[in-house]
Image (spheres, rainbow, N blue to C red):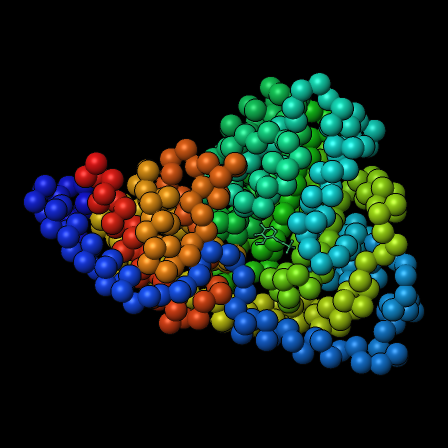
Length: 429
Ligand SMILES: Cc1ncc(COP(=O)(O)O)c(C=O)c1O
C-alpha cells in the first residue's frame, strides 16, 4: 500500500473516491453497533453467574470468623474478602479496606476526604490559597478526569509513554509546584493504551521530590489480573507501589484501588482500597460517619466463588479465552486495512480492555463522526484527555470486548474506512 501522504494528487483523488464509495456502501447497510465502553460481553458475565446461588440458606451466610453477613457491621470487610482483594491489590489483607460495588466511588470519596480534611493532618486541599492540581497521564481514563473536573481540581496532562508517565516531566512538575497534590496511575494494562509501568517508573514515582508533602499517587489497578494470555511469560507484572514507597521513605504517598467489576459483575462486584497503616486508620475513622458496613453478603459470595489465587487465575483465563479473539481480530483488521498508509498507529496490549488508536492530527473527531453516521458508536474523540480536549485531535479509544465477533468485525471494517476517509479529507485540506 502506498502511504497516503506520498500519493500523487491523481492517486489521492482516486483513493478518496474509492473510500467514499466504500463508506456509502457501509452506510447503506444500516448498522447499529457499539464499541464505546469497556463492558464485558454477556458470555463473560455468564462465567460468574453460578456465584449467585452460593448463598441459599441461613447457614451459608456466616463468614469464616462467624460474622452474620446478613446484619450490620464490619466496616472494613470480612476476612475472606480482604484476602481476595489483597491479592488483586498486591498487598497484605491487614492493609485492605473492602468497600462496596465500585472502585470509582472509593476514588471519588478519597479525593473528597483530601479536600475536606487534608491528609494525616495536612491543610485540607479545599482550604488552600489557589487551585489544587493533579497530573493526568494521557491518554487516560475519562472518568478519572470527570471526578477532578467535578471537584474543580485543575488537570495537567503529562504524556504516557510505553514505560509509564514521562517521569522527567512528572518529577520536574511535582518538585516545582506545591499545589500539585496527586497523579492518576493505571499501572497495568492502562486504560486505554494497555501499557504497564516499568519497575523504574514505579520507583521514580515513589522516591521523587514533591513540593506537596501530602502528594498522593492514586494507583488504580483496575486491570491487575486482566491478562489476555494464560502463559505467565506473556503476562505483564507491575512492581508494587506500596513496597516502593516504603523503600523510598515515603510510606504514605500512595492509595491503591481495585475491584472485581471486570472479574465478576460490573456494578455488582466488590471494590477495595489498600493503603499504609496511617492512611488506612484515617480512612476508617472518616468513613465511620458515612456507613455502618458494606454489602457483606456480596463479599462472601465473591470470596467463596474465588477462594484461592488459583481459582481466580482459572476464572481470568476463561475470561481471556472469550476476549482474546476479539483483540486479535482488532489487530488483524487494523493491520490489513491501515498498515503502510502512514495515517495511524495503535497499541497491541497483552491485557486490559482497550486498544489506543492515534490517527493523523485533526482526524479523530471526524472519524468518530463518520462512524456514528454509519451506525458505529465509538468513545467520543477527546475523551482520553482532560476536559475532553485532545490538542492533537488524534486519539480514539477502541473497546472491543462487548460486541460479538461478527459485529466487531463489521464495526472495525467501518472504523477503518472512516479513519481512511478522515485522513484523506485532512490531507486534501
Ligand atoms: C481504569 C479504570 N478504573 C476504574 C474503572 C471502573 O471501576 P469500578 O467499576 O470498580 O468503579 C474502570 C472501568 O472501565 C477503569 O477502566
